[in-house]
Amino acid sequence: SQKIEQNSEALNIQEGKTATLTCNYTNYSPAYLQWYRQDPGRGPVFLLLIRENEKEKRKERLKVTFDTTLKQSLFHITASQPADSATYLCALEGSGGYQKVTFGTGTKLQVIP
Amino acid sequence: DAGVIQSPRHEVTEMGQEVTLRCKPISGHDYLFWYRQTMMRGLELLIYFNNNVPIDDSGMPEDRFSAKMPNASFSTLKIQPSEPRDSAVYFCASSTTSGYYNEQFFGPGTRLTVL
Image (cartoon, rainbow over all chains, first blue to last red):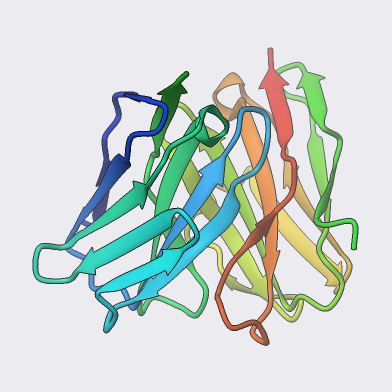
């Protein structure tokens, strides 16, 4: 069955360092991979999308890589700030239906001042 | 735009009662999604609509759950009868095919507690 795995344990890093979050998937051939941010008590907010034929995508301090051979995406936040503390969700959109995405369970990031 | 609007924000009910959750998508968006989020299972897609028509309801857990979208600006998710295991946060999201990214815009969610 299709499976999306993100680190269930929280990731704690020092302010100013680069945070790297991992999203692995199995039995899936996604056309797109998205990353969302979710703050407590709020709905997820879209951050970045990367297509299957793209290796890397950047937006300000954010960088996403997508390796369809390894079936993995890495999400980097450079020069991390306490305001980056949140849960980050990856989401895969495949051929099951246009705009239908499947979300991972998320990784909680805590940036320590 | 006010974004996706959901009501109520919190709902506490007793087992066996009917629960109706409401959603107003962003104007002009042609896709609407209902999700359920729990600690154990994460964010699960229940059903989604395109132009008010249900496209995929394979995530609806059982017949106790039903969803409607009578027009482009309103959708409901109904649980009848409710059970304690239905306790979760329910999110509504909308998106548009005219956007460059297939991003979904989420509402603030409804926290449902079934006693």
